[in-house]
Length: 97
Image 1 (cartoon, rainbow, N blue to C red):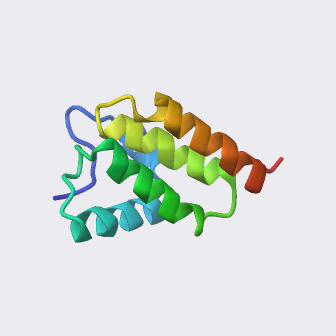
Image 2: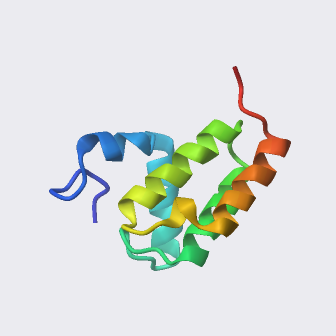
């Protein structure tokens, strides 16, 4: 397993997921035996909920949401529960100028 660009993922896509987030995702999914590119909705949301405690702002969380959507080949970022989750986090950790 490596979290690097593959033929189906451009290097730009992978770079969205900053190096710290890649490491955290890597350990999170390894510990739970989650396939690198196929997390379930609940697994990805659990990861974001856990990381909410560790990120400084909504923009970091939004980057994670985008990256998970891209690497997981699903519409994770557009799911109504994810949108609601992110909206609630915006109130707690507003975007910085």
